Image (cartoon, rainbow over the protein chains, first blue to last red):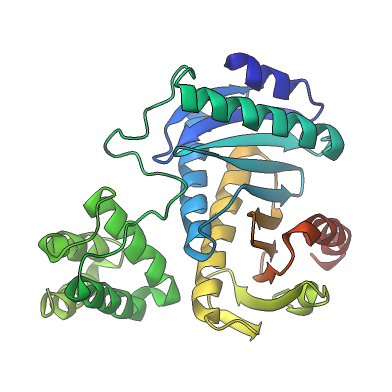
Length: 212
Length: 107
């Protein structure tokens, strides 16, 4: 399957290609010398967070394009908890890249479905978050849902409206993909407390423990 | 920036939010949950800024999200973020081109 990424590199302007899973684990990558594995792994971690954030507002996505001053990042949803990232410089030809990308995405999807992609982690592996779904699963029961709403409200006192995202990510961390239940409420409180200043943590814990 | 008209001048965008880079709402039109959208787009802008810096791509200009039934676009500069929902996903390419032309002059 390395040949799929190699074909993409024949398009003028393509400088790096990466296939990664929902936990940011790099499954395949190819790139110019400066884009080594360590750098690509770091970038995949950031891109997974960006995809999670996108899915808070638009759960269903096929492609994300980020235009920069000196190039682009093209992200394609491969399904089965994987995404393709293509990094380009300003010389990229949109016509060539659209066709090449379609071909690559189709081949990679088939490869993932058949399990023939070297280095691809099975979707069912614990800890791997599906990219096609939000980072956190829905809560289980009205009590849990009410508690999460309170978490968003209380945390917003310290971080503002972004608290919704923090809570969603926190639930993803403590539940590892399972629905949120009150059994893990204390762990979530502690996780959220770590997101704010040391001096504010006690007040947040106290406010949330009341309802846990 | 944080100028709504950057996106609302397109007829396909009837819901939009302008915010600062920290995710607070500056202005909005037609968006029922402007606070959430501003918070999320502020976070998306920050994350793509990080990715762009790591990859040597410079500052982000815009980010588009394309799905089968819906699409959205976020215009970014160092001061603010404007996010708009695109009613017709097929019109996204035209909006991207127009932003490419408009943003270098705005930034």
